[in-house]
Every structure is written in structure tokens, then in C-alpha cells.
Image (cartoon, rainbow, N blue to C red; front, side):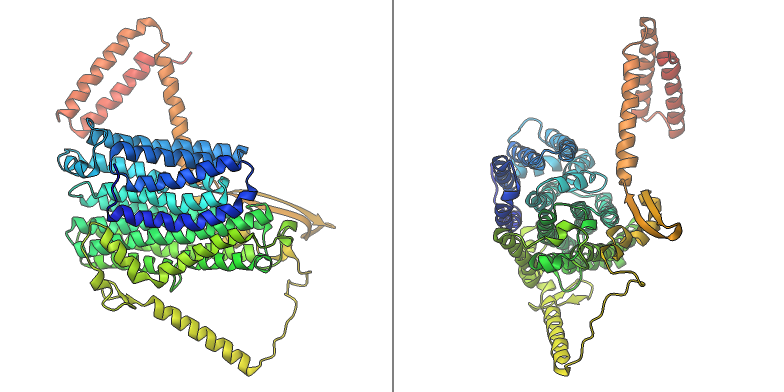
Length: 619
């Protein structure tokens, strides 16, 4: 029923690292919640269900805890049942059960006769299955839709902002990683990975990282911004896993182990800094009563602890050295750079694309968190609530500080974490190659990084600069901020929309934004305004092109089915004729008696038959 092997225990450790600080934070946050009983029941059940998923060893037990995890998180999104929360919960409910259908099909196909089959037995069943690619597609869609990978990511910017902040931290920081665990667990069950599988995961990861960070830049809702960054970081994790799968196929097991370790290490890192970001954003939200960054500003003076903890997490997610986020992304870069000796033409295209995507993602992430931190905590207050904000209660602060400690722990004890990951995954042991000495990590292609030495150097240099500055006793001149002759006020500052403007205009072909502006001129002057408004709204490309068009296509198909079920009885003979022709046509295709030209021609003819003979003209 349950299995406490090394992989399960590794992710139990991850869940506990994310959940324990969150419990302190949620205890202090509880005063902001009206339906406290509803919240507490589903909150603790949610944590237990995630642990249940990672220790399950039988099909029914796994599906039970997986569904329990989905239902409790769905109810937690509905903790405050506003119209937006109901819409977000409905979307999340649909997407999570869309993925569940694929997971269920995977188990039904692989083990149709035994609902209590253990995962060790399923490995043997998978080795004898004739269509392993079908199993790969099922687990990819099933688990990565829960993880938030493109194109199944659209629920995240809806569900995370509407959930209470401790729930957002758990869903983004921990639940998405449970989906990564499930994908890893079952991908290792499937034998003999074709090269295409790894390329698909690598490509999904690269696209997810780019899409996530680009739409995060366009957001001014702080929790939606963080939700989009979850998509970005799931993409980075998948890049590492994809590299591991590709090198495993090529029998380069040492390089494969490095890729897998990099991906799982980033899984831990993302859990830590994203949980901390959602906690600190939640603290800001409930002191200002808004998620709109345009209403923030100057909060570093009123909420200094929250501000500096947000800054630590922002530096880490931006992958600046020597943080844990930098270390895992450095490992993923190094794993891809090890592909220089591979001669396969597909990989010569896939690896440069993934390297380019990860490099661009890193640069854009820095810009995004300069915006997020600067607009939120620096400058002047942009609203009355921001002026009267104060630091959150002690329990919330303890939760944030503990999670900040987790971020630092994952950086300082890098060798121990890497050793734990390496020994937990079914890969070759490369720890001694990575760490010939404790303080320096080596890649497999000659690169090296020493996080403790980097941190020490930064602290020493900063200390020396401060010491020299104070020793010289330099005079400091303080003067008002220059704002082109106008009075300095909150409206003369950069806004979140304005900061992202140049990048948004560069990617306008992707965003296709809706712009709303209004201005009232002052005394007839064209360049002086008494009032002005400029708003930009961006609807995600995948939601417009994929999901909206799917709805339209579904409506059209339902109309056709309705017409077929209500036509005159005289046309039933025509329907039978078309069905018979379809069966014969299908037999020829599956019996390889047709070429692509005849298939296309006969498909067109069949479509014309259905339109003219069966459906007929519109009435």
C-alpha cells in the first residue's frame, strides 16, 4: 500500500520543508479568513494528501490521494467564494480533472485487471506493453497539466491569486512539485526511452519558461505575476529532466545523472523561494487590501522584515549568484553545454533553442523582479492603505523567516542536498565527481562554482566598502528628487505598467494587449493634464488561441451532432451509406492499402458526402 523508498522520502522531505513554515504563517493569517473551520479542515487534509501521493505504492491508493489533493486544493481556492474565486475554482476543477482522466487511462491500460497493482509490478507490465509512446503521452499530459507546463498552464494565473496566500504558497511551492514527483516516478517505470521523448520534454520546458516569464512581466497583479513565474520555473525543471532523458537514451549515463540532479535540485529551490514570495506577497496584500502593484510603494519603511525577505527570494528566483536559484540554473546550463559532442541533427537544434530560452528567461526574470520589488517596496506610497501599512503579526513573520532560512539552507548546504538527490534517484552515483572538495562544485565539462566562497567574498567586499566609507568620513548631501520642475509625488514615479512598457512593446506580437487610456487637458494645453489614465490588459495567447478556439470548435461539433440527430428519416439511408464507406475507407488505411495522397482525397470526398447527403442545406 505504501512505499518509503528513497525517491518517496526525498519528496516527503520537500513537502515538510514547504509545509512546516507555512503552518506558522497560516496560523497568523487565520485572522484574515472568515470561514476558518472550512479552511483548517481542507488545509491540513491537503498537506496529508500530498504526503499520501508521494508514499503511495498501489494504483487505487495513489489515485485516492491524488484526487483528495485536487479536491481539497479546489475547496481552498473557494475559501472566500467571490465571483472571481468561483470562476477560478471552476477552471481549476476542470483542468485538474482533465489531467486526471489521462492518469486514470494510464493505469487502466497498463493494469486493467488489478486496481491494487504495485508500482514495482507495473514496471514489468510496462516493459511488455507494445505501445510505450501511448503511456508516455498519458503521463505527460496527466501530470504536467497539474504541474502547470505549457499548454496546460492557464489555470495557474486564475487559481493562485484567488486562493488565500498560505494556500497559494503551498499550491505553487509544493503541489506542483508533487506532480513533478509523479512524472519522475512513472517515467522511470517506462523502459527504453526513445530520443523523441526527451526532446519533447526539453521543448515543453523551454517554451514554458519563456511563456511564463513573458506573461509575468505584463502583470500588475502581484499574485498573478508570481503564478506566471511558477510556469517559468516548472519549465526550467523540465529542461533539466529532458536533458537527463536525452542523455539516458544516448547511454551517456553520467551526463544524464547531472541533468536529473539539476532538475530535482531546482525543484527544491523553486519550492523555497516561491513559497517565500507568496508569503511575503500575501503579507503585503493584507496590509494594503489589494493585489494591484500600482497601489503599493514605500512599503520597505513600514514592513522592513517582509521587504528584505521578499528581496532574498527575488534575488534567488532571478538566479543571481551565489543564491540557490543561481546554482541550480548554472547546473542546468552546464548539463546542456555538455551536448557539444552529440552529432544528432535534432539535438543540434533542440539544445541551442533550450539554452537560448533559458538565457532569455534569466534576463527577463531579473527585469520582472526589479519591477516587483521596486514598485512594491521603494519610492512613495501610491495609496492611502500603503501609507498606513504596518508589519504583519509574529506568527506570519516566523513563517516567512523560517522559509527564508530554507532558501539559505539550500544554498549553504549544497553538497549535502546534491548527495541526497543523487542517492534518491535511480541514476549513477556522480557525487564524488561533482564534489572532489566540499566547498567547490564541478560540472562534467570543466566548469566549477564555489557558493560559500562567493558568499564570503561578497560579504567581505561589502564590509570593506562600508568600513572605508565610514573611515573617510565623507560628507553626504541630501536633496529633493528632481522631477523636471514638478512637485515630487506618487504620480511622478514609475508604475508597474510603465516599467514593463518597452518589453511589452517589443513582444507586442505575442501579447496583443488591450489598451485603455483617458486624459483631461489643463487649460487647453496639449502637454499638461489635470487627470490621466493608462491601462493595459493582456489575455494569454494560449487561452485565446487554444482554449477559446476549442470552445468554438466544440460548439460547432455539438451543432452538427444536433443536426444529425434531428434530420428527416428519409436521410437515414444516406447516413448508413456514409458510415459503410467510412468503415471501408478506415480498413484500407489501417491495412496500409492507401498512400497519403489517396487518404487526403478520400477524406475530402467523405467530408463532401457528409455535408451534402447527410446534413444537407441549412433551414
